[in-house]
Length: 155
Image 1 (cartoon, one colour):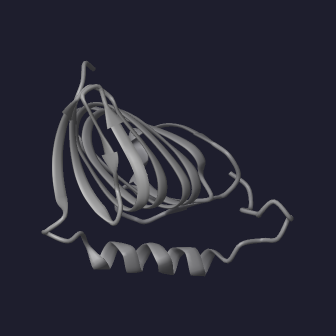
Image 2 (image 1 turned 120 degrees about the vertical axis):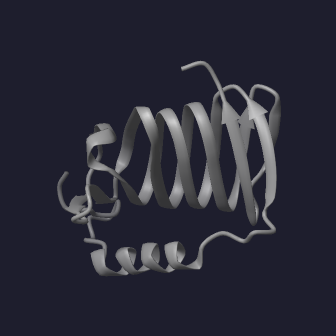
Image 3 (image 1 turned 135 degrees about the horizontal axis):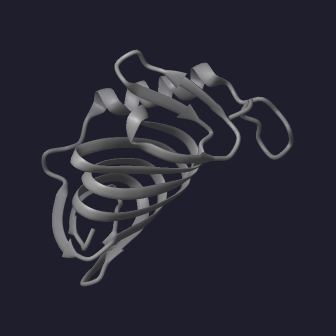
């Protein structure tokens, strides 16, 4: 990944985006958030923050930040910067598109940003905060301000 730039070619502040991620992670999710359960693949789109804890495969697209286990990342595409966090995870700034796969244990993917597009297949939960929509085969709704969506599909 290269240096993260906006469409006008301006370098974006890495420290500001890292500070945003730290603030969002520190805030956690509200225990009163709506909880729903659906069957099939999870599809979500919106702006804000997403935490996926799952076994299977997920692809996240968007602009912003993403944290994932380095060993579970199958593919990255886009412009940005990768920073090892020292605990086996990596922080991707900019990220474009990231595909993560974990078949043995559950893995955790955290994303904060704009124009997030999430696709997940397997079994797990997605905690979504901000504004957007989500669907599974038998469920659809909005994630504003916050929702936890359990999903289960064929791996």
